[in-house]
Length: 261
Length: 374
Image 1: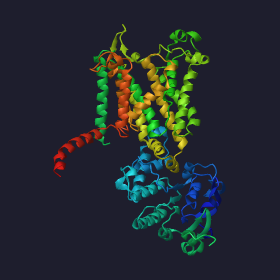
Image 2: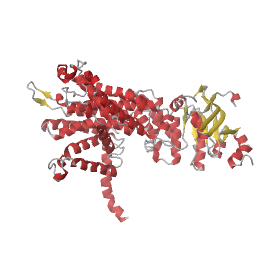
Image 3: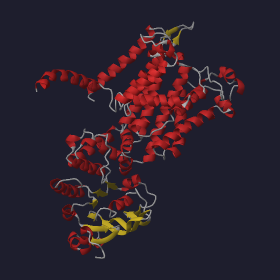
Image 4: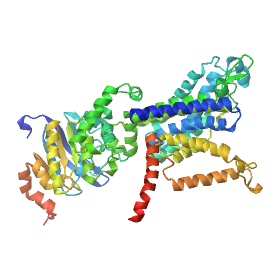
């Protein structure tokens, strides 16, 4: 895949994450190239979110290495620094700023991209920048169909819209790589289909690379360029959607066939 | 807020300050009202600063009295007139500092001194979570109280002796050559100081930094994932909050006319915490209203319970001296029970809010027959 000349964005080498005696991720290696939509799938507890947390700096891996655009980020790089480098994420169990309005959620994510300091911000000396940030935030909300709800408290939004707000908020950090952790969880088939369109649209509009964890197979098969499959922390298959779909080990893992059967 | 609302709000604020000014010229200077207003203004400032930290940034800190102490001392040390230093620092040969700075400069220095202490304390302490942070900041406040009474620091802090003779609120009154007061400003000026400080804090909380603070309060993990540096922003909130606590401490020194470290006990922090909670965590106006109510109730309205009848409230002799505190405690428990989120919750006192309140009130009245019928 790297052979087609596209720039490598994310490189994971032999990533292992242990919690006490449990090995959540075991020697995972993968790569994601510029502009791709890559999915990480696997049964519950396979270690997908742990892999995400290692990429975003929430966990420091037990061993192995994660590199973003050629720079190692797996040791001593805090989550906020990683976001500043250009990786944004959404959360599986929605983590909005619950007491803040929809618009404020997006504005808060823009905070680190603004140049003002605490003094100029307090004394409102950077009105032009504040205005620019404001209009960019409104644009992101419009794109996710949330503009008419901008002054609503985010916790009051219906579930599906909260997921869209998470995406808008992640995009507000101006990322190069977007990590989506089960963005379709709790959505009905129609909403899921719309989400597929949304993901493709934002990928093209913001020239993003997308790394997605999801259980909705129809969504994954429709939008992914490539798929990696995890089971008990180990990579068991990878390749184009069709190849993975036909892979016997993947079918076994999902149907729960015992390895020694 | 629309432009008209802004103008009306500003107009009301000016009218309020004019009222304070006028009252001070008309009523006798020793009236209880002014004691309440002065102390209320000080507590309002400190309560808002504590709310910024506890209510808006979600850091449960109990170091407020410690930072007020630093501010009070910084103010006192740099404003005691040089001529008086021999008397004030009588056990330390007049102390080692032999100059004074203007009151306004000293107020700013009080804030900066408290902010510097906060910056140092924050480095280790802000890496702790919730209850540990509370314990660590409380510990700091206790230590600082002991340190300032240390005899070896006497040439600067006057040890465990009082600092006095520095300019007080009464020094703001304009007098004629005979020492007669022409214009009373001893209540007006503290209101101006508090007003400016609270205004600055409101601007900060409305800015992008205020949003970052609230984001941290709502969800640290998410805030971090949005590129907000947790430690840097917590430290910033802590330092700024302490700056204003320091200014509040300096004002308390002016109000009390003397400074002694032993007065800045943790009970003071609890009083302020109580005001913040009663007013509503996350409500600036709540803290302001709460502090005046708190001071008025504890210093004035309930005094009658301790000594004779006052404003129609009196208690059987057997309860005397101390009964006030019992009643006060019951009132506070009732507030916490029935207004769990404080008087204001996390909303602000605004014209729009008042308008909406009356609309609801009258709207409900008009609707009532309809709902009964249906």
